Length: 314
Image 1 (cartoon, rainbow, N blue to C red):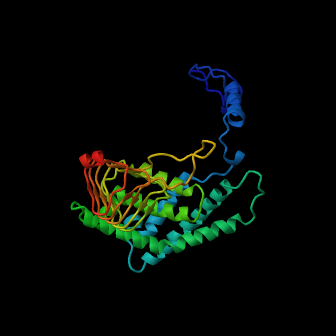
Image 2: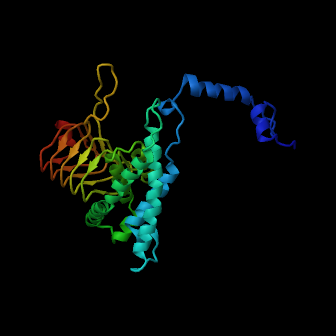
Image 3: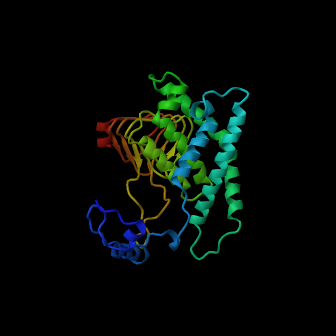
């Protein structure tokens, strides 16, 4: 068998490789450059950036999860004497990495004609400090989510099982972190965190969605929650529920208007069963029950019990 050409030779020539396949790499590379630079440029702000790292964010989420629930997501051998040290050490390393990713995100969103911001490091650290200060409150609301899962699922044997085995709990943990970053106006990172959760769980929650405490997603696969959704306290969803938009408003030029309220408002103590699709800026009144596979595009008052037949007649 003939020897393979060196990597540089492969890029500079169109000779055959060791398997006899002819490549015309110089012309392909030129055409790809023309596509990138001229025909189909998708480079954000028109210039190269050091983008936030999805891999780094996955590690950061693991570190934050371990700091919030150290014996479940961190180390099982922690003692009363060592647990605070472990949490502090984990947070120190994790928040330093997060600040680096926030810095990348801020630079990513800087206009192309702007001079490099000498204060971007300080801004990234200030945002990260504000985020870190929210962690005790974030853990408190996550604890309410865990309680809701335990109380809402007769198959749940304990909090440890829920933390380790329930994809809905993983999705809401990631969402609460992503939403905190979203509220701090961090570019891009919240969407990346949400997409990591979506990849892990099959649950797609936009980081802009506002979700109250004691929230439980049972089973969870296929759940979609849109950007401007507002969910109250003690709400329970089952698998394949969609809280989506019915239509997308456009401006005078025919472009989509971003950030307009277009997703449902779900008030307190609502249950939405598997496969239900709830669309548009409608309100589901508190204490209502939305049956499986319902297609709902109109508001319903408090205490409603909506089934397929009722939703079609409505």
